[in-house]
Image (cartoon, rainbow, N blue to C red; front, side):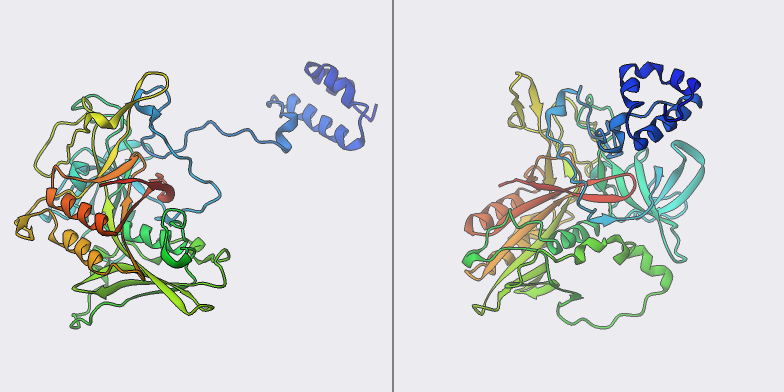
Length: 450
């Protein structure tokens, strides 16, 4: 019936009773049967009847860099799902994968320049080597010879043609001294932390994590000024075009259009955001001002941003320390907990700060960063009922469940952080997840251990 040929009917034989019922259906269903018969005749897979209305969730693993499989012992570490409806915070564009060969480069002896061998497709190549800008040097020992890195092309006529944006960090599960395996992607450019924080604040993503006084509530910014309001400086000589990219590889194109979507902002509150505002004896990275025009009241939130790239290791998985700059901190036993099934579960913790002391001192004590400690004290000095100071840690990797001060490297910073938090300064941490395609996704707020 309905013009269905004997040959087509024979091809539909595997459908059995379903085909028998459908041949008596309306014309629209008959057209679907004819199409299915043609597909079978061409040797293609028969489509699912539900495929037009219901799509099964894909089980294909996305390229997120280092998410452990469910069979691994440490895989019980929560891997938050990226909200597919939320656009990325940043999009660096197409990245080029490579292997770091030598830093400093064999031809340019600057520690900020590295020789990188580019991949050809998914395979390593020893024939194409480029000079790459390494703005974060060795990234706590992750960006060394043999490391997989992800590069962006640079504009201009500088000495380097590429810049290192991401590096593959150590996987959660490995054996001591073993550097093999796919590690998590880590942001390796120092400007990424500030750019991520900017987008997080613009979109009001800390609304649930930060409670303010007098009923004020953080939301998407509806008044943004990206001019830096610091103290005036003496004019500097104009940079050549080729020099600009050496220190400013990331531009406005890394930000997504989603930051301008302020449709959910309450019309009663004006939320403005400014960068690099001078307060006290230093600058804060961001100042957010919330103003209620109905009550003529306002509240300021000051954000000092700290970019976090290093993390601890589960005992027995730590790599061999290659030098004083290599961050190898073994997690204390408390970081390993027992799950409901009786199996131990390790939860990785991000660490800040890390680096060489280089003779820096704060309050007559040796520190990794005098500037970082000074920023905390400055936040503390601004604390009052109309101002909420916040130190915002940006965890530039997706495999950490919390953040803590790295007491092993800088006990002074840990002490200062604990002191300012005790007096009322807020400590928050945002985690992000990178993809090999150069997209950075908001991955939730994680606790800060003080």
